[in-house]
Image 1 (tube, rainbow, N blue to C red):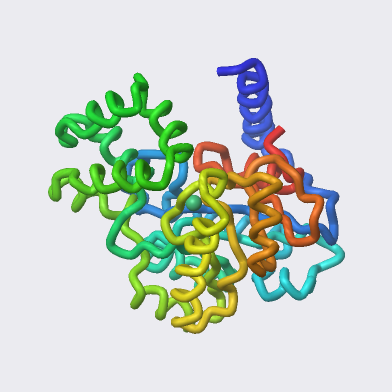
Image 2 (cartoon, rainbow, N blue to C red):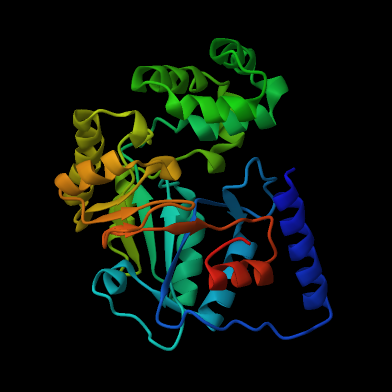
Length: 317
Ligand SMILES: [Zn+2]
């Protein structure tokens, strides 16, 4: 861990102690501004995490309910029309990757709390994303056969972590080949880990589209890093999802979140050229155009109160 990482962990631990002592949480500032946050998957409380992209359903409900109490939650419609609460920090809640659990586990919670969400979907239905299958394999090495060793040898890296950093930067053909390889994981393993990789079907999207609390937007057809794509490649990835969304009646095919958040000035210019009206980034980076928006990915390993502090500040430190 880096010095900064240690310092951060110490800070959040100290603040957790303050919370245990019962001091009230003070959240002030940034009134009238917007903080966009990003979830991925939701799993059952009894499921053991295999990565940092999932929330247990009860922790998810708890965090959303606290966000609702302290901030003003807005929909994508509100955000697009600049309908903000001037007296509070406005929070736009988004989900990436289009997991089926967004329908089965997240929807009941957001309907109960009456909270609007935006889901960025890919073009995939029955062909899972490589990162999810790689997490499944890494969490169950004994049941994964030889696939992990083969991939590490192919990429000439030692760890799964290195593999995860390496794959998105490869040409599209290589990424798709690795994806196909990971789809050969044993059926018994895939079956029992379904919640971590299963994506929304077209029928699922139709159901979500009927819900006024849900907006469906564009995350690229195959979840490829846009920094590796040609202009034609970017256009194809975007159009495929635009068609999928238009077919089910969503107006948000031109609202786009970069896979892995990866972007460059060139991708930003090209997407603007293609008529993309909102580009969602991740991590820190440039937001010098009115259509560029920074997002913060929530972290299931950070306490709810600390997560509220982080959302309030708009940064992890
Ligand atoms: Zn994604």
